[in-house]
Length: 319
Figure 1 (cartoon, rainbow, N blue to C red):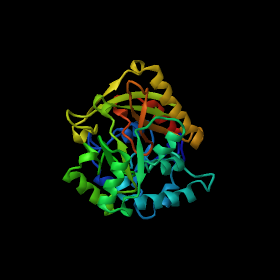
Figure 2 (cartoon, rainbow, N blue to C red):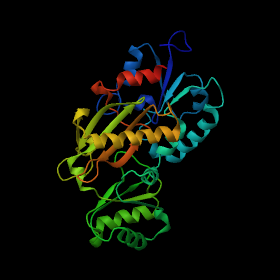
Figure 3 (cartoon, rainbow, N blue to C red):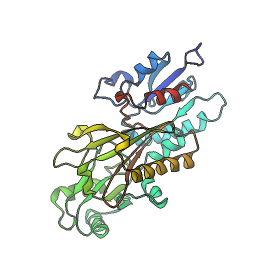
Figure 4 (cartoon, rainbow, N blue to C red):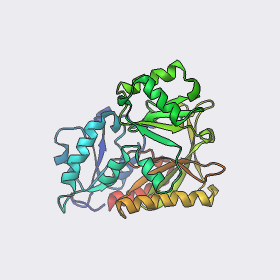
């Protein structure tokens, strides 16, 4: 690898928790094998928390910096946003600034799920969605707002800044809310969420699984199918969900076209070469080739341990 320390490139993986507190054995930490892969290729790999004192000075000493290990950043959202603001001021102010993967503007945009509404405005299908500031409402007021949005049927309530389905709640029927539903609404009005409250129509097709399309550089490198356990709607493994690698050739051409258009939309928005990696999550239904559920461009699990996307990831980290 070519870099500033002899012929070895200096790569910084930003973390949220102190590196010595992170368990790097699968399945405790996503993308766990990336540091060892980079080291085997000759890189000088360092892990540092973005919360450390003097981190901005530290960052300037590296060739490449990635956010891919910033798991749980949303638990410190205000501090993370301040860090990004300061990094934005310094990282691009010098011709010797390190290469940021992903681009800071993309990271900032991707922190809040209100980006879904922007993607809907571009013509992409998303679940019927509304964002509100819950602290402005009483419990009864928020109850009425949810029912007005969706008079009957199931909705999902979640923070606009979150990860791993934390503080996510499904209302089975908005016309007859349970005590648990009202308790969750009370938490929302008390400011227990990060960001806005996302009110989203429940998509029954989640039972068939959510598709994750992984792009590294400009290539769709692989596709994963994540399925919830029986009777649940959350696909994360911490809730009993499971996943499997799919053959890209098994995906309908109409679906692939929509996903590619989403990726190209990100490139237009942030600039060619600014999207180093991204995971595009969504559902496939009978009448919609792809329903966009999330775009993950900060610290998504990319399933590099499958061997897919590894060469492409190394290329962008080494460039």
